[in-house]
Amino acid sequence: MRQYPVGSPASVLAGNTVALVGLFSAKDKQFAATLDAVAASVEAHGGRVVSRHVQRRGVSRGGVAKMAVPFSRRTLLSPGKACEVAQACRAVDVGVAVFVNPLTEHQRAVLGDMFACTVVSAEDLFSPGR
Image (tube, rainbow, N blue to C red; front, top):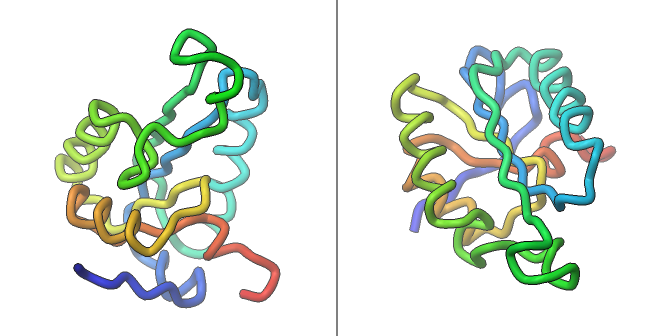
């Protein structure tokens, strides 16, 4: 399993093309604003956002109780969305995929292999200690 070190935002993002990815509850009406805020931070640290990918978790997928739960413990996303994002990342040679959601080390490694790029969480990059 590959490890993806997370350094300062500038060292991870500078000069890289970036895909933004987020899993949002269907109740979250501010998801676009959240993506915009992360995009602004990415660009402020030298990255260039080339795509945005949103997975919505709605009531029709299993009820209100499951809306904040990931589709997959391995990828956070549904299998179809993970494949869609992987194809998009490979098509434009994305250097870094930044997830709005927190990720485990295992998720970073699995997604990094799928997407063929470094995968990080915005939480890791833009936390107050960085």
